[in-house]
Amino acid sequence: NYLDAQAKKGKSIGFVPTMGALHQGHISLIEACKKENSITVSSIFVNPAQFNDPKDFNKYPVTIEQDIEMLETAGCDALLLPSVVEIYPDGQPRQHYELGHLENLLEGKFRPGHFQGVCMVMHRLLDIVKPGNLYLGQKDCQQCMVIIKLIELIGMNGSVKVNICPTLREPDGLAMSSRNLRLNEEERKRAATIFMTLCFIKDNLDKKNINQLLEQAIAMLNKKGFKVDYAIIVNAKTLEPIEVFNKDQKMVALIAAFINEIRLIDNLPLN
Ligand code: AMP
Image 1 (spheres, rainbow, N blue to C red):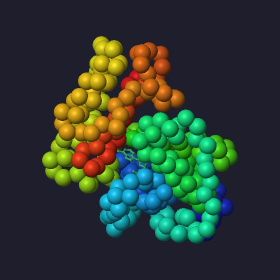
Image 2: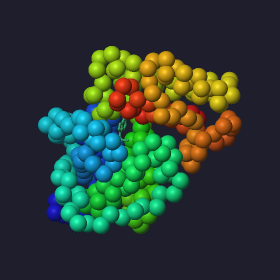
Image 3: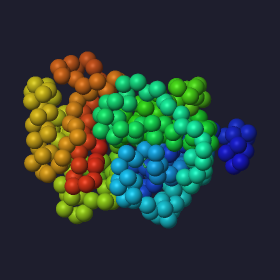
């Protein structure tokens, strides 16, 4: 009702969906949204449908009081904080989203069903909030591409503009992430290796053969005790792996790796 009334008054609505345990990365999206819209809406919903590992879901950090304070301080106008049944009413049939090759690569390959879950929740949230602008983080670069595809599939591409915001990092380079709250002191120090490895890839891109470079990158991570799902250089538009360096195409290096049982992801645009 609140948003319908705002829309009737002609106010532009910007939307920042999250799973909570907010950090400055999320707040940077709120700030970008506030600059460009009359009304800034955020949502906090730890979406069970996108967790392929129930342990990861059960241990996902929840800091709701602090989140609300951070949103208020940042000047967010409205928070959508739904329950699971409000998002997934009982008995509602599940839709399948045709995501094509995006679904089977990288995160899609290592987290089966994950992107269908992301699409389910985003479809529902977009229907409720009906934003003109949507703010997403480059940190989850494949997720951004999936959501752009979803918006096309559900015919909202004429009404929602997707804005992709840069990754905010801790002083040692670690990408801010809600999952960082699960790291103990020793793991937290080691976690910066992911960004160091991405920088190593970027710095040596034109000096080495790509396969050798990635082998070295994986060895750097293994040496620090990471279990690596992938360390890869891909075409930024298609996410297809790049085997031969070509400076004319936009490339991004991506890493997904476990530090003990906590899975972290990060990426770095290379050119
Ligand atoms: P999450 O709560 O992890 O689902 O993230 C909500 C939104 O914040 C997504 O669009 C993320 O890509 C974005 N985000 C997460 N971490 C960062 C970060 N370090 N910098 C900028 N945006 C981020």
